[in-house]
Length: 355
Image (tube, rainbow, N blue to C red):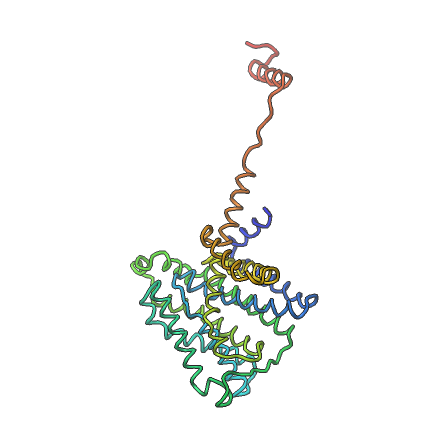
């Protein structure tokens, strides 16, 4: 356990290149899972990867910058619907659909610039209202609602097999986390941390707060758009109820808080641990599944607001203090006492006798 915590600390304190390399190697290892796992576990891991990647993206604006968005699933839904329109209506390849999904999500995020005049509760409600408004618009507009006028969703054929889709989502997860690593260790990342600490003070020392908030929001919107575009053909059928669901945003928030909000490692640990808890509770306590899941979240938020990451660092510090504590010596025997006295006399007088 101590070696694992030390490795995590070294990775946390290491250079962004080292962190990116570790994430890339982790992704390569994940690509081997379909060789020995059945289709159920492969599909389940895809959902876990999507949740972790979305939480990592939300963490940029909600955790690092301090602007909790409650409507972030709007970018995921826009990416999915953009992919459906591009692939079905215009019959373009999936790669172009994913690029278009990211571009549309980033462009739409710029419409939120006036909302950044608000903070805290008001900002969260404004983003939630934007999500509900876009969901209604997409649902009512015939061009976006479906391929035919009476359709209430899109059937999107997938050009990839299940294993190929799995590898694609592993790549999207690694790309999302690596981009967040470099962003947070850049000049922009330091500016976002300053905004979170004290926006007024950051502005007074010359940091262009409006520009950096726009960058953070656009950066946190691009990957949900790309992931949504890849998720649409994976699901084969999408609707506004499933793609613009506010539960998607709540999962981003819960995973970030549970793992450690404002950290790179937090959404990864939070997504893995919550998924394991969810599967155990679902398989063994079906009737109390939501109760157990919700209770654990409340406990970790109440007693460890810093999430799993803070618990790991506290555990590491306790282990280090235990290792540095000197081992108490036993009672000195008569032979040892006489030997020590003889050495002292010889050192002092140069002979076997005391002066």
